[in-house]
Length: 331
Image (cartoon, rainbow, N blue to C red; front, side):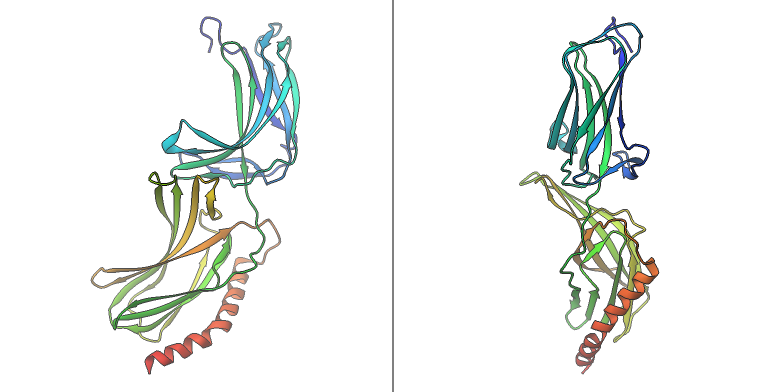
């Protein structure tokens, strides 16, 4: 729209060189909807064209320079006035002058460092985008294009199992194990729960996956807990000596990799939360942090095969010890 002749008389478009072949990834926007964006990884080159199209052929466009930026920034929703940039690259495309016709400008940001994964949360957003600007005396013409960055990891060298106990003296003694502490986003959590002493009437038991987002520092720290998944282990009263297997597939849930102290602005951590409810509606909790990571697209076994293999390894290495311990407690 033009007021008193000062409206924009040109349009900008950003086109990536590999737009026809580059993969897209779904990403959640601030309003909770999902959209698809071009997918990049750390170290990849970002290149393309900036097209400046004059709306009125024959009418010159005076400008004070044309540039394109590659930006990585963190925005805290409670501090929207301040954008914390951790990547900021600039390419000048044209010196001050005039455009007498529509024109395209090539750009390339070579082997760009993209250290963090794109993230949209309850109180924070980490985004990467290209921003093309035609500088003018009164009103700049600006076009932004968001991209999505994912961080890939290799299989962790140390991945020990998790062993925990839930106990109420002389009333309840439960031990539970998960086969490992670090899981990729399409992994299977395999475990077992052992009831060594049961003198209260438990009517329900479940495992929750909790996402905890922490933003800010010092006195201005905000925590947001979000229950991502609920997995019912049992519905009814267990008996002493009983063991219940756990097999929880992560692929069906909306998860991100664990993020710790990202640019000293925020963290995202995940926890397995064991919940027991007795007949008097009393709730008992036990929480354990797990690490989630993203692995690249490689040929994988089917999810059922993964679960079977993990279960066999887990049961083979741990069942004898747990059975012996259960026998000791019963004596």
